[in-house]
Length: 464
Image (cartoon, rainbow, N blue to C red; front, top):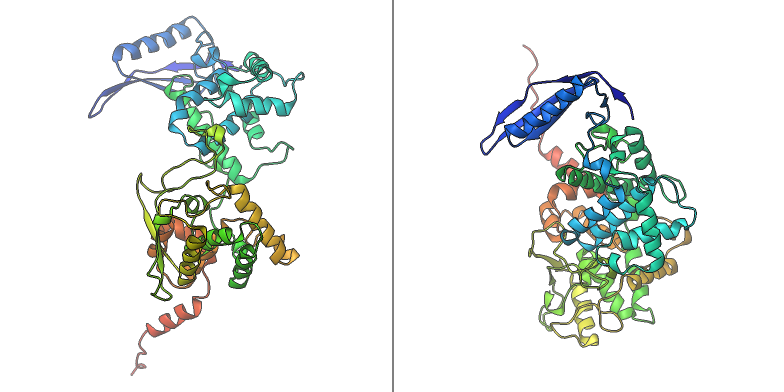
């Protein structure tokens, strides 16, 4: 703990706002300025008097906190483990299943990094599991088995105080641990970025609860230098028409549930749906033209998503969690046109499965929600059977989600206005263009013709 006697205390700064007046105590420790706002002048003067008394007694100040050595904050008296558990309980009702799960992963990595010593009587995987699946799960913690309880009690006894975050060297150590995989190699950029985002929210919570004074995490360029990510789609993941047709045909001929899965994947491909949106659809959400209308477009109404997050993270105990559409206001819907080919597929699918208007459009073998494991397994099998070995190993169509990327890119390449595409897929125009701009191609000749048609500068007569 580095200390100094180089301390200056300034006058209280009064700010009269439209709604309230704030009184800010200002002081300087080893050249670094500190500020502490208060709602009343009495509180501000009391805190300032404490600082002045400390300097008058010749007491050293801690450089990392800006406070006298004798000043014990909440962060010094509270263990990180206790604070992290309290944070989970406070935020649990506000978070969705995936957010709960990701928060638990981040807090697990941080808590292990903030132990006084690494456990020798417990296996590392057992400690991680106890923290991730029990300690940082508000609904399961009370039912933890005895062996898990023993691990968590050990963690609680050996957890450093929250004040460890006030030591820059310790912060660096924690962030290095969070940014690393279990094998010691650096985690993917998107994973590191997610950890930092969650940690920033945790630190803001600590500041609001007056457990920490300031956010100790790096800011500005220092925080983004190692976590640069891009949302742009990799062009290599897109499928051409022949590949998509071959994959859908193989799935259609799959012995077990092939027809049902074919309709599901065809819907993803033709309408650029997210998988969690497609599995939530009901038969009544599809508007089909009359049976004698020939090849016409259908229309899909998208209003709900049911992502698969794991039953231990949902309030209902179900594997899937029902939620509103991603990036949309509560209760908002969107409509997507379905190609005539999809009209034929869905009409036959509804007939073959004998589905009623209120039934799920795509069901599992037992009639429930189509499981993500079934979807992923079928898609991987199709890729392995249809694609050449070097293509199978490439990013081409590697994820089920690449059906959405492929269709969305095709719409843009076919000249559909970005605003219309954004409405169909549930994105804003800026996000759409930032994500897919690198995939738009084939329009340069037409753009050149437009530029030529606009003409050039008029030729001017020569001098004289």
